[in-house]
Length: 304
Image 1 (tube, rainbow, N blue to C red):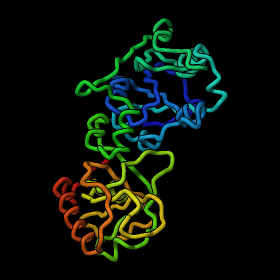
Image 2 (image 1 turned 30 degrees about the vertical axis):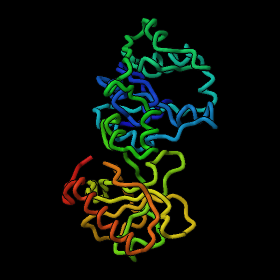
Image 3 (image 1 turned 120 degrees about the horizontal axis):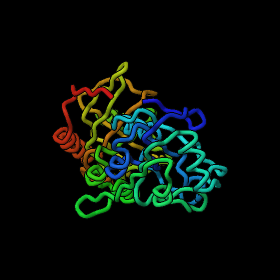
Image 4 (image 1 turned 180 degrees about the vertical axis):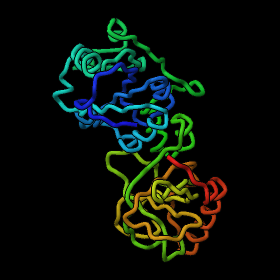
């Protein structure tokens, strides 16, 4: 998939899906269905318009790009969203971006999509334009609940990644570079690959999770089952902030500085303080076996 800044996009007949697409959840996937081009904003508009009220995002741009590519989209066009763009009228967005810059023949949006200065534009305004056909996608429901990024964020923060994944349509994922920790896990016999959560992203609530972890090997990713702790390790007074610590099953290598992908399958338990180190180690053994039971074969490979 080609990734193009808006100012470099060439005008051609396009079927364009437009939205923020944070999480690329089931509702977003219905909007994107049939589109050859996805038009989105970077950074998230609320990070510019309402900085104090900007949400913690579900997906980094890198993860969002990969998820959109997996849907068969040919081109992702990024709008560098700043105050000047935010001040454009809805009509300027339609004429300058959709028609002149992109050459849209079909435009697809969710029924609650708003755009233009003071959010004056909506799906009906697009529908009234004759330069392109407009497809308006109703909100998607799962078990009578509306699928939305804000709802999914709440589930992730609460640690209910299993339910969040049902709304997302794929496992919730964190990525980052492996950093040095305090070597506590190694001393206990469970060496971990540690990530510091991106402050712009939401992350699962404190607890232990069954995950799949991926390590890049050339052009491929090799996947491992993993038991992952998210939290501050209350048994040890380290003074450090939140850390994501993944113990990769059947893995023995140095990952410092490497990129690590973690997809969260299910919450095993909450984070707790143990009275003794032995008690913690016993629980860690149980966590690893639970993660193995919920995980996949350590030899499974997936090309992305």
